[in-house]
Image 1: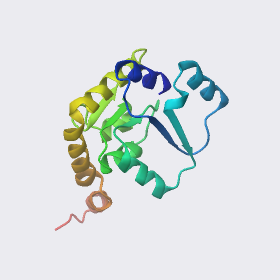
Image 2 (image 1 turned 120 degrees about the vertical axis):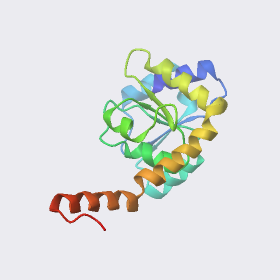
Image 3 (image 1 turned 90 degrees about the vertical axis):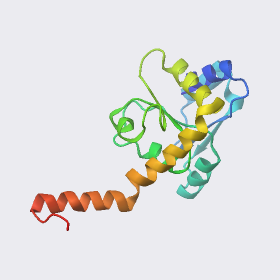
Image 4 (image 1 turned 60 degrees about the vertical axis):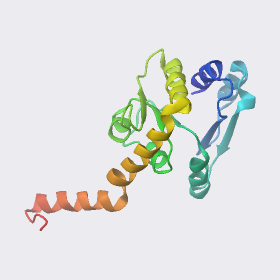
Length: 167
């Protein structure tokens, strides 16, 4: 993520700051890497953020980045889309289920070009694709992943399994 952000700043010096929020703290080696890349003054870390504060932070953002090696469902990406954020994420099994590449955001292959590809996708979003992706992400989150929608699908599957299809 840090290398991707440094690459983004090379392409777009006025890019929004990078905010990292979640559980835990950055390691000393992470902090050293921020300094080595010269981006420490552009990165804010918010450890152990409350769910309410995270929701507010998402609504203030421009783009949601997820650089995980693997994701189960990509719930964080779904939450970001529900907050109206386009997503740039590593291509994983989970993000392939949640993010529609080129529609609600971009899925980036996990290869040696990842930082440059993250930066390029983010520039595309910040320079024009973002508004449409934001709207499509909001729609996808509510139409496909809303708790009532997913509960109804679960119940329908259970009814099918026990032979009492919904009428």
